[in-house]
Amino acid sequence: MAGSRHARRARCQSLRRPAPALVRRPGGPRRRGPVPGERDARRGIPKERLKEVGQHYFLFGGVSPINDQNRALLDALRKDFAEHGLDLPVYWGNRNWAPYLTDTLREMVRDGRRRILVLATSAYASYSGCRQYRENLADSLAALEAEGLELPRIDKLRHYFNHPGFVEPMVDGVVRSLAELPEEVRDGAHIAFCTHSIPTSAADTSGPVEEHGDGGAYVRQHLDVAQVIADAVRERTGVDHPWQLVYQSRSGAPHIPWLEPDICDHLEERRAAGVPAVVMAPIGFVSDHMEVLYDLDTEATAKAEELGLPVRRSATVGADPRFAAAVRDLVLERSAAERGREVAPCALGALGASHNLCPVGCCPARAPAPPPRAPTAPTREEPRDRRDARPAPRRAAEDRPGGRPPRASCCATAAPPTWRSRPPSPARSTWSPRWTSRRRS
Figure 1 (cartoon, helix red, strand yellow):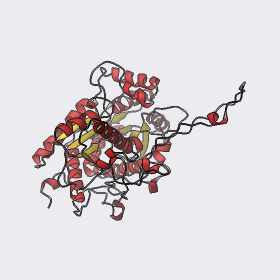
Figure 2 (cartoon, helix red, strand yellow):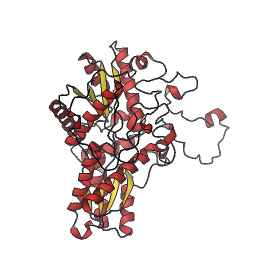
Figure 3 (tube, rainbow, N blue to C red):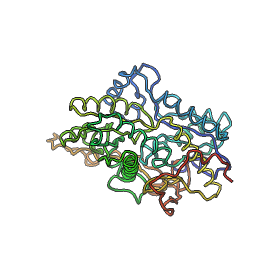
Figure 4 (cartoon, rainbow, N blue to C red):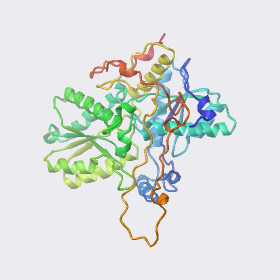
């Protein structure tokens, strides 16, 4: 954020003790009223898309299920922290609905909070799942600075897509869903690991620069988690179920390519291939919010019924106590690392633990190319500079020519990822959700 004072003052510094935690979510409506998400119209989301999504909410009484799920997660975190002697107040802030992030940060500042840890409820690397949250934090800090408030220092917890406390509840969910299928189709069931589709350009530039290209870190991380879960399911059931990573919840202009296949198209393909049943495993989502309840439980399930294909949808992590313990683990892990302690982070699969500080160039915003212009016969010559005009993508200051030198802040850091020097953890988990209960020296 181009050399502004709020970015300088909010740069991440070493933690002396665990700081108050802020749970960061997109948010959703809490009562029936205007079209849910209409605030997003100012961010360029087409009104038609907002109306379509609004109808999804109205099927569920006009209220987003994410709010009760947020409260359940907050209760689980507070309970876990209290049971393990971690005196850490927990707050909740949203991007798209009350309680808004700026309001929550203002409350925290007025409560005297000077160090804040942020948990984003998006486990994987991408612009919308990480960098955009950090940009939102910077915008909120700018608003607080304009009000004359003293700004806190903010640290965002690392991606946790392969943390045992996130993965193991999903393994249990898939095993339960398989057990719910009729016995005659159970062993032949296919697993569809589902996540939110994003533009291919955003996927290709997700994660650190060295991981850009062909799906980037976003696809790579999902594939790694899917393999870990599939392996664990095979060990638990004795059956090697075929699986595939599929996508859902596509939006945006039709000319912009997004990750495929869509879950409904995938169900049609599996049925045509003779697959007897499918378990839909939403590994890209933390809780059963609208993208899960509508896109999978309503739309995809209706498609499966139309095809005569038995399906089950496995549970998301939600407020599982193991996930709450994983968040505590991430807090203590970050605190110890910032104090210079040797830390062995918990991670399953082949990729190892993610970085604590996002490197420069990580998950940049990219403006999609416009659709090809159809040939026309204009009556007058249009100025070339207007014909060739294209909207410029939002670029972080460290990506701009002549911009400020890279430095650690809530929106970008110059620190390279250090986890690559460590060997990845073995696929089999040895993690116990209570191992962090002892005080770390």
